[in-house]
Length: 94
Image 1 (cartoon, rainbow, N blue to C red):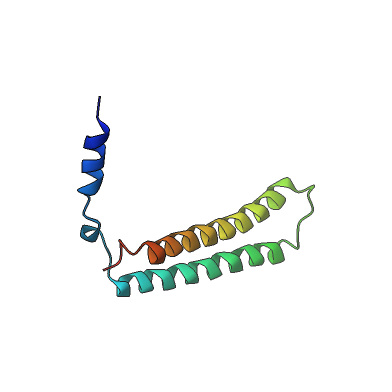
Image 2 (image 1 turned 135 degrees about the vertical axis):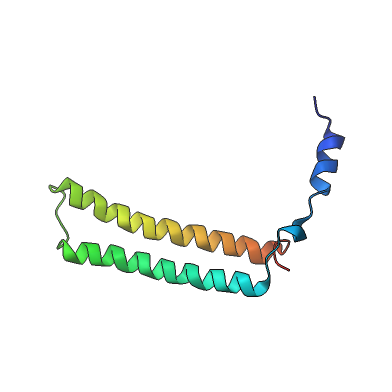
C-alpha cells in the first residue's frame, strides 16, 4: 500500500518545464486549431446545404448532418478548454 507521503513526494517531483512548450509554439497550435474549428463548421454547413436539409425520414443523411455539427462543436469546446487551461495554469508554457 502506498502512503500519502509517498504520493505527495511523487507529485512534487514532476518537472512541468520538461514538458512545457514555447509561447510561439502554443500560439501556432492555437492558430491551427482555430482554422480547424472554422473548417469543421464550414463542412457541417456545406453538408447541410448539399443535401438540402434532408428530412428526418432520411435517417442516414439526417443523422450524419448532426454528427458533422456535433464534431465541429466538440472540437471547438475541446480546443477552447485546453487553451484556457494552458494560459491560466502557466506550468506548460516556457
